[in-house]
Image: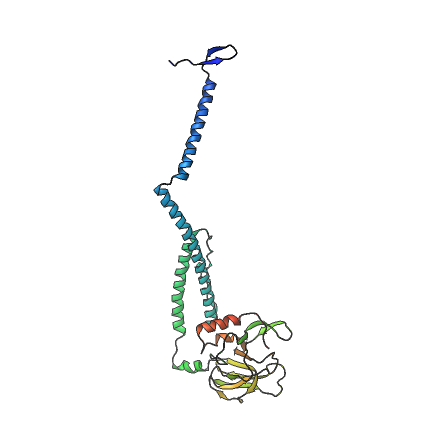
Length: 318
């Protein structure tokens, strides 16, 4: 039996016995429970914030490493996607230059890109594209080896191909304007520029870019308007090279020309804003980008620089 408890009553000046009350008991119990819970939670929070176990330390270090690795991985994935896109563009250009067609896209090439935060899906996507690129590379190698075999009967065609440089030692500084839509120097409107403009001093030697025969030329003391003094050389197989705005013309009608032979000098005749050579390649009656053919006597890096500059939308010299 529990010992009775007494409480002093100032009104009666007597100690009175405390009777048991359920509500008082429940209130005290809830108060103690709340205090104990608060104390337990506070103690756990202090322990978690101030005391770190070896497992927690290891997991924290691993999480930090994963955050850094994920950021690095996302950067590598973005670089890989950029490289894959660049390879696709180069493949399309190669097909256009060699086969005059665009490569067919398979169903796998149209798959949508996973969300950037889904690292696992990004990895699967990259692995898929890597395998696809490897398969296509093998297929393209087989295709190119099949169509690019050269025998003795092809040699005359190769020698006639206008693959040389119309002027020696061309640099990006010499290439003023390229093939495509450009700004006319006279009326300032956009128009299609059918060749490339190479800026050199008046009198600089101009040479034939391939073996051929003089198809047409114009040489006049006045040479007002148009191409001015120009030369067209027929290289066979529907290919013609054109050299315009010349100062001197050193050829005659029907003359056979060798690759590298001097045919004239740089001038500013005709509709020309400054001394330069306007150089064109015409295939089957239509002008094409001369940069595709100007590959001899120039490194791959220098040719890339020339090609990049030739694509800028700027003002031509004619």
